[in-house]
Length: 294
Image (tube, rainbow, N blue to C red; front, side, top):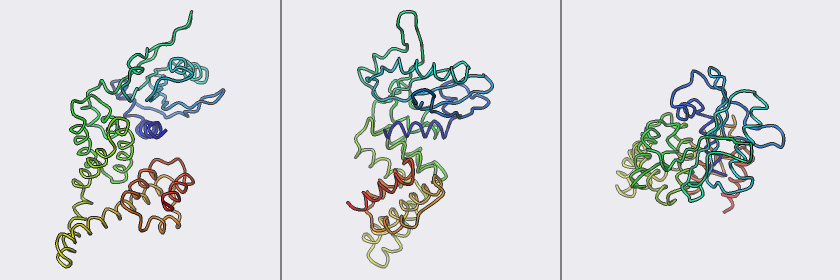
């Protein structure tokens, strides 16, 4: 699931920030652990070892808590496997991303006869978004926090996204924000606010606008601005795709460039998000070939 991959990416990429958020204080150090546990393999969303406290921190991100096995049993299963492997105390937190009747009812324990296991539950829609807005690592989660106006909240998020440097990190955070905000808000609203606000505040946009103005002096002001902006956005998105592939897979295969040339801005935006979020180059090529053929 896209939301799961986004949360796993964020929590692993910014392990210290997530540990600080959950614990309420900054641990001296964290060590990212393998998230695949033994026996019939299951993969946890986030695992770190708090070396000073000699404790495991385990996070799970969920949208829909209804399923088989039930989530309380799964949390117990994670705990048993972790303790069997590491023999250390474990802090478990279940982070619920989307408000629903089932998510509101969910208990923070598994209980059956003599067995009882407790864990923490965080319901994001109940939390103040302010701390999330102040931390780029947690910023994508802000869209799921408490608000009286979704549009106002998304505007605040867009303003913070525009401030993130370098641009490669901004691309990653923006991709995750788009995915998580999609759990709650209309896609057209997300695209309009994030893309327009980010571009409006960015140095890249200002450069694009200047080129459009210069071109407009020769070809007609309004037409030149619009054409310059469109071309500049396309180039910026292609650059984002190349940077994502180079950073994540240490390679930009030569066959990528001719296929992205001539694609519409909407298709380039989709590819840019996928370049940051896909699990492998093969997965990206499958998406690219599908986009190129449509």
